[in-house]
Amino acid sequence: MANNTLLLGSLVTPLVGAIVALIFANSNRLQRSIGVLTGLIAWVFSVSLLVQVHDAGVQTYALGNWMPPYGIVLVADKLGELFAFMVNTIMIGGLVYTFRAHDKCMTYPAFIPLFLLMEVGLVGAMLTGDLFTLFVFMELMVLASVSLTAISDDQYGLEAALKYILISSMGTLFLLLGIASLYATFGTLNMAQIAQILLTGERPILAASSSLMLLCAFLLKSAVFAFHFLQPDFDTKAPTAIIVVKVGVYGILRLVTLLFVKDAHVMEPWLSTLGIIGILFGSLGALRTYNAKRMLAYSTFAQIGFILVGIGWGGTLALIGAIVYAFNHAFIKSSLLMLMGVVASYTKTKTANFGDISGIGSRMPRALGWLVLLGGLSLAGVPPFNGFISKLALIQGGVESGDWRNLIIMVGAGILTLMYMVRAWQRIFQQSPLPTTVETKDEGDSLFAPLLLIIVCLLLGTVFTEPLIQLVSATVQQIQDPTIYISAVFPAGPGQ
Amino acid sequence: MIEFMFALAIGILFGIGVFQLLRRDLIKAAIGFAILFSAINLFFVAVGAFEGDFAPYVSNVEAGRSTSDPLIQALILTAIVVSFGSFSLVLGFVNIISRRYDTVDSNDINKLKH
Image 1 (cartoon, chains in turn cyan, blue):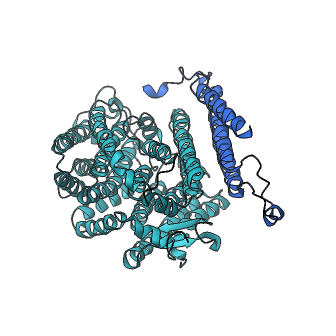
Image 2 (image 1 turned 45 degrees about the horizontal axis):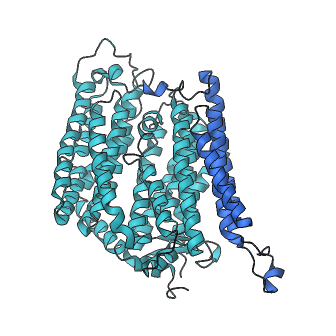
Image 3 (image 1 turned 180 degrees about the vertical axis):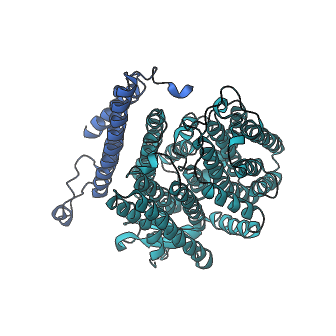
């Protein structure tokens, strides 16, 4: 087994960046530069790793040269690396946003280190091949993002943070419990080895219950319907630069394609059903919210629902659709959240309540309004944006699986997306100001970072569609055969 | 017997932890959170140690005795550190919230609704 240093590099770079940023705690400007620089270096690492994974197959790194199954192994397969690449790209957006933002919390010395630690947690969770390390990285991500929310400018951020940590830690608790049961059953924490034992058709006593616990933990992480209640509060109050990235979706994909392949047919109908409920609930919830950021959070439930339905259908095309959807949605939603953050930054109290911001668009740069409209259209799946590509891919998967009832609901809910996004845009940018509309400031956050992400969305929907679909097709081809992952970790053959 | 005691203790701790976590008082909820974490840590320990096992020293292994699983204990240490970190964060939040809202009753801490 060859150790690939790039793997370690993409994980350690943000960690080192966080520490270096802490050393320069008294110079905020320097810290922000360190943040952007670290993000760029990590991005370069992850791009070259992505290329390598696609050229040469799954890459591994045995930490401390302890060979698996005894040591912790980092594994970059096509799925994990694709998600890690997505995280790194969006993190650059977030770091660039902090560079020019006026939020007070972004001037705290802890902000950039925490932000980079969140990146470590996300990337680590996606690149680790060891279940316990997965738990540690997920907990790291939770603690970092919760701390960021707690220090946010919003006076109720702390309340959201407390809610989030209590509920989210319940999720990681169940993850730990599931991992403990898996260890009790298999005597190993290596994902490849567990998958290998489960592939043989053996069903030890605790396997089913631990799979359920892991599934619940990941569902909670991705804020699916029935596990969703914390997300709106959190997304509304978090500092704008914190971005939705779906570590939970990644975990579910791992569960149904690697660990519990043989039991996937039991989980999949449930995932579809939860997804459909989530689509309806999220879209309708988004229609009746009072706050622009909260609307986006509800819309996230709906979008996660689309992804889950795709995973639930389980066919090749459906999986391609789901992954493309997850990939594209991360970009669209983070750009939209940033745009709403920019809108809110023009108000004195940094609010995004519709009552307060209706009609303030006339006092803002015109480009902002157009960007919000473009983002909204992209989210609703209007060509030529990447939202259209992901919906198209997903619907093709649905046609392949022949599940017409859910397909019709999905397409209908797509129209709801258009409704709430356009309505929000009209409220902010087309209306004349209401008597309740708050005072605005002359200067808000820079538009640069969301503009960057919208351009990425546009490119993904036009020029890069073909490469993206090919990338994801190759990914699905790989994850549909779990033996590729297993033999990359254990090249010497089973049980070695 | 030890195994039974372990199982009983884990069960009771789980029960207390869940009950406390659902209390309205945030401090009790935080304590319940810590208890729940201990229950899971205990479960992890119970997975690796059985009656009649020896401590996993090299001398015991070389003497051919059956030893308990040393990996578990390394994992537990990590899990304890992680749980300690999140517990202290929760307590910090509760501390600031109690000063900002003048209460620790979770029913009164509902400003997010509006």
